[in-house]
Length: 122
Ligand code: HEC
Image (cartoon, rainbow, N blue to C red; front, top):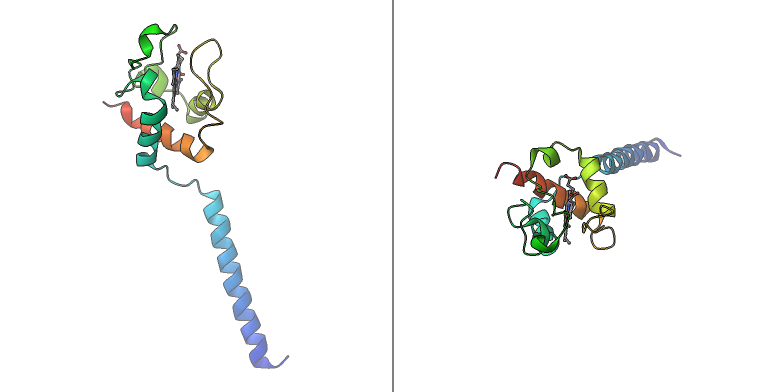
């Protein structure tokens, strides 16, 4: 290999290393949740029970026992993301809360969770 070819090889390898590192970095980083998507998902799937404000006063709430959770409540908001995501994913046995793993993917669950977090202050 002549000197010029060797330099080109080194440059290509360096570029590749930077690119691979970048891709790996993006994978590791949690993508920022999409609040608009979260709101859309919430309004589509959750409003009926949890209500527009999240207080658990949706149209279907009256007939349910136990009532849908008040998502704005301190008790709920104090729970860790992982805990709430588990309920959203698998539902809560013994209540009307269904699991959503077949309807919405992991990314969307994070979006809807992020949206729920914004309901706290309202
Ligand atoms: C059919 C009615 C219904 C629908 C639809 C529904 N939920 Fe629920 N949800 C409930 C009930 C009932 C509970 C449990 C209340 C309890 O534990 O006393 C609950 C509990 C929860 C909790 C746990 C709160 C806590 O403090 O532990 C979260 C989070 C939640 N729901 C989010 C959602 C999201 C997000 C959606 C839409 C993707 C949704 N729910 C749709 C009825 C519903």
